[in-house]
Amino acid sequence: MIFIVEDDVSIRELVIYSLKNSGFECIGFPSGEQFWTEIKEKENIPELILLDIMLPKEDGLSILKKIRSMRTIADIPVIMLTAKGAEYDKVVGLDDGADDYVSKPFGITELVARIKRLLARTKKRANNENKLVLGTIEADVSKHLVLSGAKETTLTLKEFDLLVFLMRNRNIVYSREDLLEKVWGYDITFETRTVDTHVMSLRAKLGEAGKCIQTVRGVGYKIGEIE
Image (tube, rainbow, N blue to C red; front, side, top):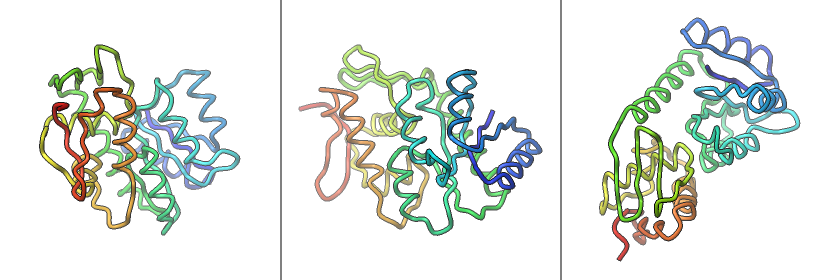
């Protein structure tokens, strides 16, 4: 099931029609209010969310922040729908935990391709049964579960992906650009603090164990045993 939150009825109905023709189930909402009603009252949890930024009352970036703060839906993939050339919105969206973005006007073929690619990455991660251990941190990829000092730690989808990537490549230094490409799948030319924001959040959530994520000045980040 895919949810689309879009106030432009023509765009919303076109996307719903196209996704259903591509084999997806899809429900549309004209505002955040109806979206939250479906999530909270009906407990209907989607596989992926298409989220327009320019919405009445509560904008898409505010909704994204709430999604990433709620344990039950924090790891749902989110694709932001942005106005053409709205670089600032793209940067903020990525920094706040969006998994991808599509600029309007967009082609339906491109949108469907991005949805399939993102869902495939999510499924691949879920089907990988590797268990990783580093010091007091344990990551169970199949269960999307992280323990820090034997205590369960709730991470967003991208926080989890970043941690797992670093744990699988421990002691290797990666630049911010490398991490954006390998974890987010982006080849971005504009400046964004996405990686820094996620590293800070990871360190905070992991507590004392978060010190294992080390900053290499002038280069980027790596993960290793705490010295």
